[in-house]
Amino acid sequence: MSQFAQDPSFQRFVEEAKTHGVVYVLADGEDLLVVESVEFEDTDVMPFWSDEASAIAHCSEEWAVYKPEAIPLNVFCDGWLKEMYDDGVLIGTNWDESLNGPEVEPRELLEALSLVQ
Image (cartoon, rainbow, N blue to C red; front, side, top):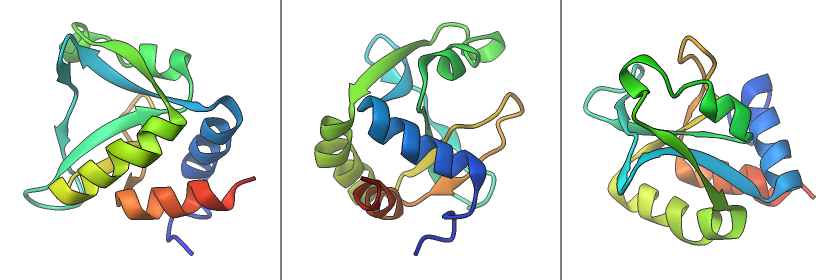
């Protein structure tokens, strides 16, 4: 079981993503938001949100040029997670206004999503 299984932010991300069948990333045209990990040196994190309103809330200040882009959950699971795993990129799930939240391995997120009915 994932070390994040008890994290409320992670749980909400997984449950809402499964329920709505979509996740949101911040995009500026072809450019997607990627930030440096606060937990792991020389590691990138791509934040995702399980609802559009939370993603929109982060489109301000230095991220004002970004807009939420919906990704169907099946596309996210079947393509994005594998590619991010291969590239060594972590996933930020439902970060709050202070950019606090889990930084998760793609494999862990895929496992958690597969366990939710």
